[in-house]
Structure formats: C-alpha cells, structure tokens
Image (cartoon, rainbow, N blue to C red; front, side, top):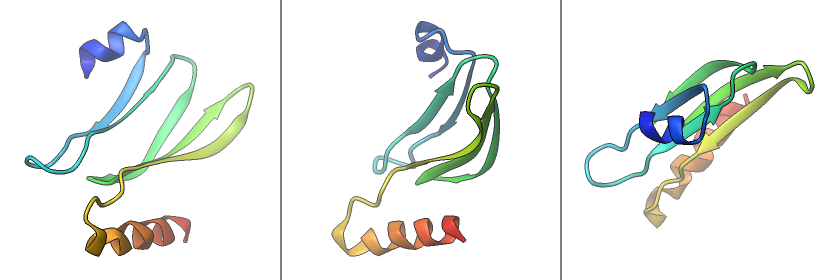
Length: 84
C-alpha cells in the first residue's frame, strides 16, 4: 500500500488489512494539508474526522460490509453504533 500511496502522490494513508483469506482491505489516502483524526477502525471500517480550510470539519466513514448474508446484521449494527 505504501508504493500505491506514492504512485497516487498522496501524502498520508490509513490501512486496515484483511484477516486471513476472507474479508477485504480498507485503505483511505489523503493529500498533504488535510488534517485527519482516526476516531476508530476495525476489520470492517475506518471512521475519521477530516478538516481542511476549504470545507471545514466533516466526518468520513469507509465500510467493508460482511459478505455472508447471515452476518449482514453485523454491518448494520456497526453503522448504528457509529451513529451514536
């Protein structure tokens, strides 16, 4: 991911690696001059507060939902928890 960050000419990144053979990789890249505070992260999400001079402060949450139908409720629970 580091080399990918360099190819994109991004100054910063946060990555959550996949666990084992299943699941996915979550990565967020951002350019220099943008302040980011990672609020929390797990194998399924990255939740951050983003600040820049042009747009002020706002929240970004990147999600990787559960792939198994019987576990989809866990993704919705995570969204509800992040909201509160």
